[in-house]
Image (cartoon, rainbow, N blue to C red; front, top):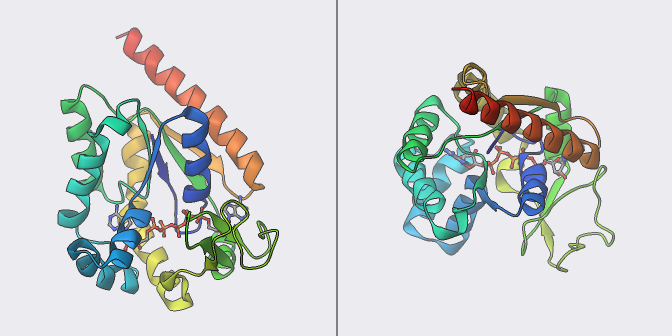
Length: 224
Ligand code: AP5
């Protein structure tokens, strides 16, 4: 399944919980790319300049990376994709790869959040430098300032959460990623969830939406 939404919509927050509840792997391309940047790998060095500008990393660097991960043994039972696909070309590559594996996208969850709320969230976002759990200065503060509740790691802010880069990321989202809403609506797998409710309520809505979308898709396949 796929999580779609603008920067700060809560894709990472919700995808992590849903993957855990469903017992399937969570693949976040942003996290994979940021880890590559930290490790200084060739991928990281190439991706960094695009990420710092708030632009999409070229498909040639991202698509094979995701295809490798979804065909691996840990994704055999399924995967929650967070941050991929981000363009029609990436969605078509994903559909092609999954259909060769006799599979497909079961549900796409779109988290709908207003632009004012997105900017508010990204300006106060913190994340754990160790386990990457996201926090927010107001809506999800850590119990001890600057320290992760789960692993005790130090909390840091992301380079691309600077205001001018956030504006660029939003523009890139509207131009290149938003067309995926229509792409998946036409395929009958899109579920829209109000992402402005409190985090636990959004999780419940997301799980309900996934259940009904997967049920509808499976009934459709069964009826031919
Ligand atoms: P990526 O890491 O995917 O960033 P993004 O899509 O911009 O999304 P974010 O991680 O900023 O937000 P989110 O929706 O996950 O929200 P979160 O849960 O953190 O990508 C970064 C870069 O990598 C891209 O710009 C690009 O360069 C590159 N890249 C990645 N994938 C790529 C691809 N496929 N192709 C090409 N390039 C790619 O929540 C945000 C904050 O809000 C947190 O503080 C959280 O605690 C809080 N929050 C969450 N939910 C709620 C709620 N319901 N109420 C109140 N606060 C909330």
